[in-house]
Image (cartoon, rainbow, N blue to C red; front, side, top):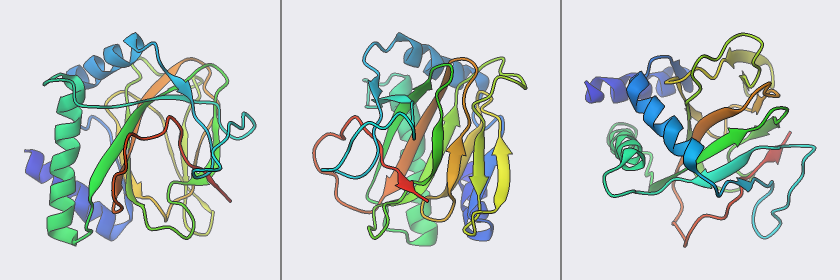
Length: 211
C-alpha cells in the first residue's frame, strides 16, 4: 500500500511538479500528531532569510515552529519513517540524490499568515522537494489558513484547505506559495527533502525567498 502511495506522489512530481492528497494516511495518524503538537510548550517564532541573516519580520510571516525528531518509536518517529521511505523511493526512481529530510510542526495563531515565497534559497541547491501535512480537525470554510499555490509565472494554480490528513508535495524551487491569515489556531507539519549536508541541529527558523 505504501509503495503505491509513494508511486502516486512520484508520478505526480514528474507530471505536474506537485500533488495534493486528501485522506492521505489516516485520521487516527493525523490526530495523534495533532495531540503531540498541542502539548509542545517550546514553539518559537519563525524567521526569514538564510543564516547568518535570519531575522524576525512580522510583516512577512507570523507562524511559530518546533522541529520534529525521533521519539523512541512514537508518532513523530512514525511520520519520519514514512518520509524516509518516500525519500528512498524518490532517489531510486528519480535519482534526486536526496541526503536528508527536515521538518517542523507549525502553528498559526489567529491572524497569523506567511506571505508568498519559495522554499528553495535563490542561488543555492538545498531544498528539492517540499511536503506539508495538515492536522486540523473540523476545519470549515471561513476558518482561513488556506495554502495558495502559484506556478513559475506567479499565476494562481490552486488553493488547499488545511483539512486534517491532507498531504501536499511539490518541487521546492518551482512553486511560489503563501498561507492566508488563519481565523483560528492552525497546525501542520512542513518538511523538506534536501541534497546538501546536514550540519548540526536546525535553527528554529525558516527561510523565505521573497518574490
